[in-house]
Image 1 (tube, rainbow, N blue to C red):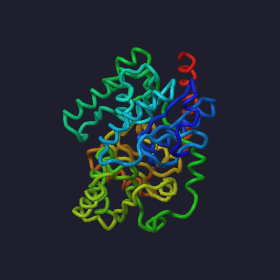
Image 2 (cartoon, one colour):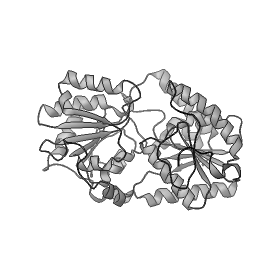
Image 3 (cartoon, rainbow, N blue to C red):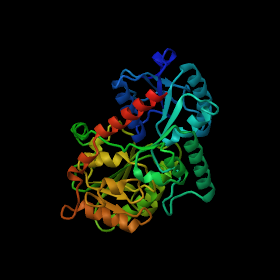
Image 4 (spheres, helix red, strand yellow):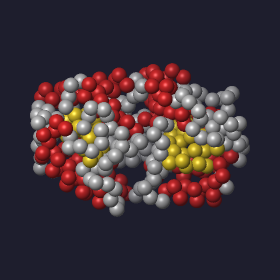
Amino acid sequence: MAGGSGGRAGQATRLILIYVHALVATGVVRNVRLIAEALSDAGHDVAIVTALPGGEGVAGVPHHALLPGVMGSRLREKTAAACALRRYIRRSGATLMISAGNHGHGTVRAASIGLRRPARIYRISNDLERRASGAPGGWLARWGRHVMARLIADDAARLVLVSPTLADTRAFRAVDRGRRVVTIANGIDAANARSRAAGPAPHPWMGQTVPVVLAIGRLAPQKNFMTLLDAFARLRAHRPARLILLGESRDDARRRLLDRAAILGVADHVALPGVVDNVFPWLAGADAFILPSWWEGSANVLLEAMAVDTPCVASRSAGNAAQLLDDGRHGLLVDPDDAGSMADGLMRQLDPATRLRPGNRIDAFSLNGVRAGWVNLINLMVTRS
């Protein structure tokens, strides 16, 4: 439900706001919908608040957009959104606010300065401090992220981690001693995923004799697609293959990736179709899926690939990828800075004689635990408020 003023927000005494920058096709947003639906079904008064308008919300849950549209830069958007969110908080009388993804935490923190209510819950969806060895970014950027993590930790009524690996974040260690850290790992409705995967192949390359490797994610340094291109070029030196990268870019990242593919001599075998609403036919149609990220929290897209039994290759530093793949028993783990190892992993997963499929591993990560975790947490906090 796009637009609107939040419906019951003005009258609610126990309104719960869920904030995310925009309702775009990302794993964070899929979890926003899941959380909103679970809390609404449990009888809570919920509203989704975003900086930008548009996107798919949740039936019966109001969606309020703070800004009229995209601005010149993400920094301008976040600054304007923080001011607008502060005004909205005061009007709404909300009891709790969930900041659902890392890109919105700064906005929520700035909007809440000096406010006791609503109590803030920060869902840590990614590695804030980006600790992977070799990851992009200098010491100054890492220091800035550490400071932001400390500010969030100090402000949080609860920190919800999507992976136990995130508990090792330096800024969260003192919070953990204060018993304000909760882990609610991501999950997926595997039956629904398989149902949504049905239908014709979404790309002409799929279903052909040349195998297709698929990667999904924002075209950003975090996702490590440059190393993936190097690995793909090495793979192509030994066997035919094609690579599809699905994801959005708000800068010149797409051009830079295509330029790199041209330099490597693989441009004709790489496609960047952009963002799609339903990733499951793409995952089911791919011969292998790769998650080469420098860092993650708990990558929804890896769960999605596992749900349709696509052979997977994942970076060891991609959040809880090792846990999801059971330390390599249900997919291959590689170092994110090693293009050769990445190419070898893809080679193995494209070969029917050597590939490792996820099988029924996805059954350990159902949505029931995610829903129950959020409902139990919110019930407890509302009772105490």
